[in-house]
Length: 254
Image: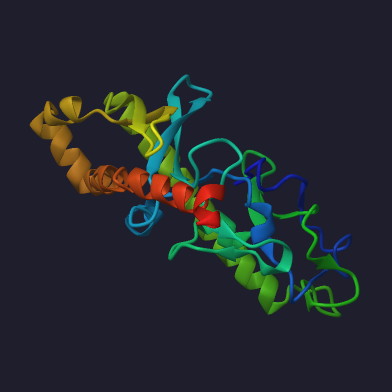
């Protein structure tokens, strides 16, 4: 899956063109997420992510058959360009959460569809951890993938499978009209208002009116557990506000 905010120069990995490419040992991929206030999540990640971040659903257009699509995301900040889980800068950048979303762990590798039938391992060319002279090689002297590349490929393949499962699940939630536009409002300690909108969340009234057949479907497909984790995650909005206050200039001065 290509995330344009994360993979700014994605290219398909080429055995010939990238044969000498190496991944520097000291490269820190966290420098790429310092201004990302959210990250796509697969359904498989909800259980762990819900303990750390609010999980919202964002509209993601429609597929070629006109079905509405949504993308679940872990929220890292309360405004654009804000990531409250990153500290430090440069090589000293640190991730201050117990869980790291899969797309971040896979970076600078990802996977993308290059045709109807074919997927390809991709890399982000803009990542400053690439080298021609030092680091861990992607290909050996015979041009065969190294253990590093094989491991990365296996991981992004698993993510891509989960991305498709997540897409279909989101489509079904929209068909059942279980997601609706929501808004989060709060008042900060200094009296200033905080509003976060533009996202979808569970419509609990509609959820409680599901038919027995629909409720059984959600239970058997695991979507009931997904929605439960989503609801639990919303309580993390308060923790985000506390993080923002702790990192404010006034708090730093105190």
